[in-house]
Image 1 (cartoon, rainbow, N blue to C red):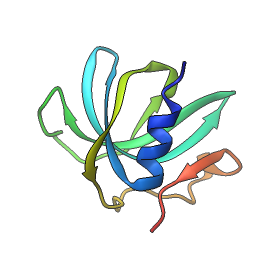
Image 2 (image 1 turned 45 degrees about the horizontal axis):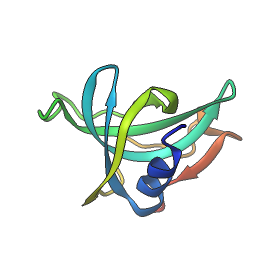
Image 3 (image 1 turned 90 degrees about the horizontal axis):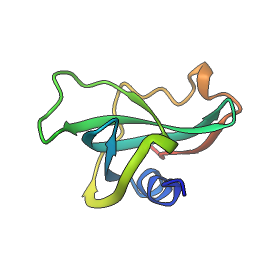
Image 4 (image 1 turned 180 degrees about the vertical axis):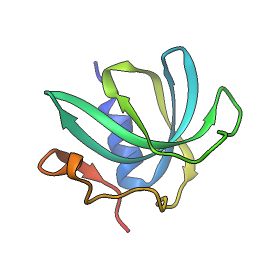
Length: 100
């Protein structure tokens, strides 16, 4: 079962999502859900990595099938300036993106 329900909720409501990815615990601000090679991905800004703030703000790509223990947090986020919804990689593949 893919954690798409929680990711959809996080993107749609601009809520942070906590998850484990490659044995690392992340708190993510999910910005866009899309497909590539028949797989679903989410591009998100990591707000915490194993409980620590990231060294730099960047947009990470996470394969949905690799996300474990996904839960929606009661914490809202604002759109990051580094997110480019019109980027070529999202053309024709976007399932859901944050508004504003």
